[in-house]
Length: 299
Image (cartoon, rainbow, N blue to C red; front, side, top):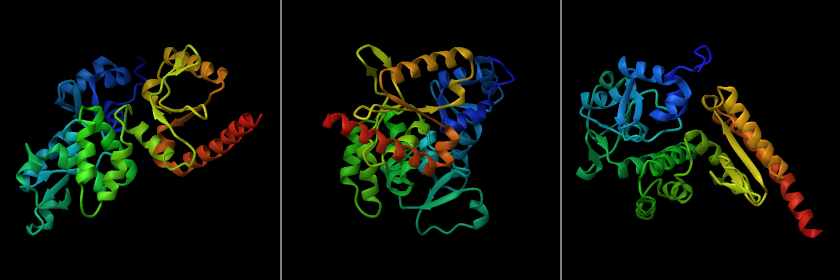
């Protein structure tokens, strides 16, 4: 891999949601870069083969310094789940009525809740509590990224459904909304964010990582609407850094187009920072493809 075009490992890690498997980081940055970051402490193992930044790892100590519990997105990352946006300050939960000097929590994002014994594990909120907090309180696209990541990491879908079913009080409707569409097939928070936009577009029904055969294998787009034959790709720089990757993707995209599919490619920056523009493109495309399907059915 050309060192002049290799993105910094911390930048790639942030784009992947703050935590990432070793294989993803090696593919993007090279083995020597990843090993160097591990050796000098910029990367830390969350679980076997899954890494986070040193800052993320230190957030647990920051919570303990104020006798708090690491929670929300910070807890999600500590458990190996990727997030859409890495929090600038650690999320820490303190008891509702506990007084503490502002100076002591100046570098933290403080949440207030009275946690029970089952809500805490090793200085973090438990997986169940972490999901409930994130799904209740985060914007939809952020919550979906956490839920998708949890399922991808092995959290049981039946357990998520039960948490949503039993949720009560403020935010319970948001919990059920996210749980109903969460899907562990989403490869990363970037894809989850693109799917969150798709879910707001009438007439568009996408499936993550759907294999297209017509009749032979044509590819597995990040998202696909089978009825409208629309394939959506969340294009990340870390996966298109050499000519071999460019050749492979160009061949796959051309095969889909030749079979009648429309392929749309969205950059990380477009999805993360300009979702309204992405939605406008999708709405226009769905309108045209739906009209074509209607005309074909009438004929």
